[in-house]
Image 1 (cartoon, helix red, strand yellow):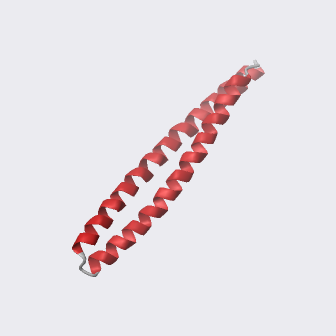
Image 2 (cartoon, helix red, strand yellow):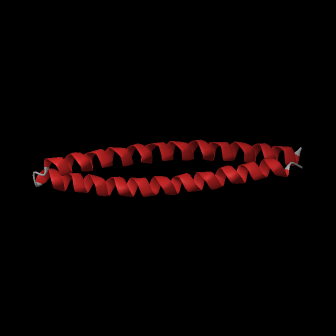
Image 3 (cartoon, helix red, strand yellow):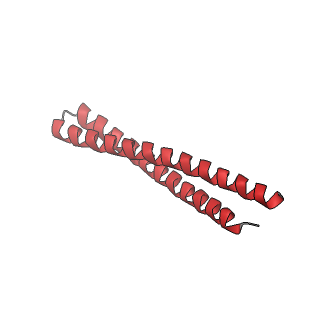
Length: 90
């Protein structure tokens, strides 16, 4: 039996859960930046609109990469879990 492979799998699943929570935070914050950007643009506050737009794009970038990282971590967790089960059964 190889408990270390199960441990690696659980670590990857835990990191995946963490990065999905990061994605949720960044996506929600991205929406608030977007709404503030639209309000500033509608009210004619050009300088504020530029700042809000920059913050929106930063949060969008962080949201995208945290989601991509969570997908890779989930795939790695599944892969190590399958290998551990295979080694357990053989």
